Length: 117
Image (spheres, rainbow, N blue to C red):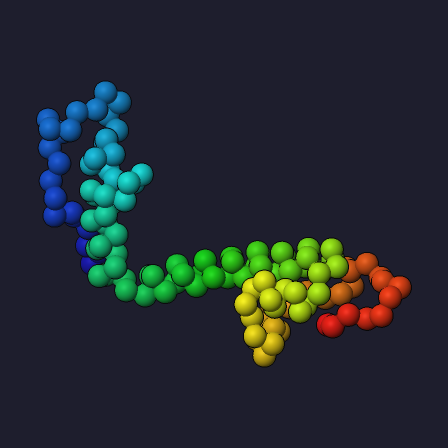
């Protein structure tokens, strides 16, 4: 059996007039994170506590993908791994994570001595 969610707050139309028929933000709360939207968020947190973990994991995956693209661009521009570790505050032991899918095939060949991988 599927149960429909009903908010605990009540917003009578007579108190929240709208020329367009769309609920004003004081009722909807989408833009401000208040009112019905905030109530819905609280409901989701109670009903699906794992949802926050899922959402953050997706954001982390997106950020890691963007970081790897930025690292590839920096390496292509000739920035050393040492410099990248410095600007990201990443310890040497964790620098492999910075590398991600980065490879040096896309980096211009230099005629000078090889720089740290």
